[in-house]
Structures are given as C-alpha cells and as structure tokens.
Image 1 (tube, rainbow, N blue to C red):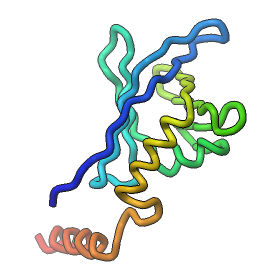
Image 2 (cartoon, rainbow, N blue to C red; image 1 turned 135 degrees about the vertical axis):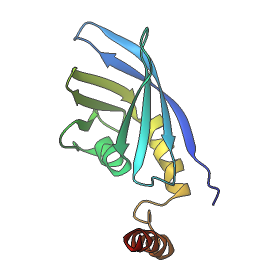
Image 3 (tube, helix red, strand yellow; image 1 turned 90 degrees about the horizontal axis):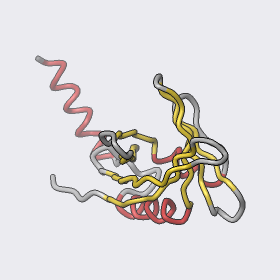
Image 4 (cartoon, rainbow, N blue to C red; image 1 turned 135 degrees about the horizontal axis):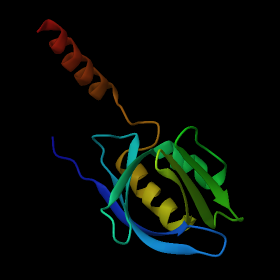
Amino acid sequence: MQHSTVQGHLVMNLVVSTELSFRIVVDLEYDPADPYAVRFTFHLPGDAPVTWVFARELLLDGISRPAGEGDVHVHPVGGELSEVCVVLHASEGDALLRASAPPLIAFLARTDRLVPMGQELTGGEIDAQLADILRGCER
C-alpha cells in the first residue's frame, strides 16, 4: 500500500544560556505508517544530524499547555500561541529549544489532514494487524 508523508522544515533556537542561542534547521516528518509519531531531525553545526521521535499528540498538547513526561517536555511561551519550548533530556545532557508556534501548528494541521487525530487506526487496520500477529503465533 502506497501512502504519502508530510514533511516540513522549522527553524529553532537552541538555547545555551540566557545570553546565547543558536538557530538550527529542523526537518519534520510524519509517516502514516507510524501514525502516532512525528520525527524531528536536528541539524547541528559541525555534528551529524540527530533525530528524535515525538508523539504527535504531545506536540499538539504542548502548543497550548505544558505537556510531556520523561525525556520530552513541550510547553507554550508567551501568549496567543506565539512560541513553543521543547526540552529534551538525554544521557549526554539536556537541550532547550524554542520555535515559533505557527509553523509547527501548520505542520500538525497537515498531518491531521492525512490522518485525523484520534483516527490513527481504523477497524480495517486493526484487523490486519491482528491477523499479522496471529500468523506470527502459528509459526
């Protein structure tokens, strides 16, 4: 089955301190084959790109209110859905990133047109996945 993906780009600020931040390009990707996830690939100067996978719903929630547990936290900054803060926790350290909310909202709207939020798995897809699981049990 062939399906399309949603791709986009976002400029984020990697905040090093209150006085220092770097603008970085982030590639966004949504693949309906993995309908709950959005991939962010960060292009850091002098380093290989780094990809993080976020729950699509976490990003949507984090635009308007604090959201997230564990390694990823997202929360709004300022009013009127103007800016979003993403905090990433990794064994190498934490990263604080800020981005304008409207491009992220537009990207998420495009993902919603492809696979509406809450309809990630239809009955037919659940039946197909169950059949695959049962075939694996027969082996």
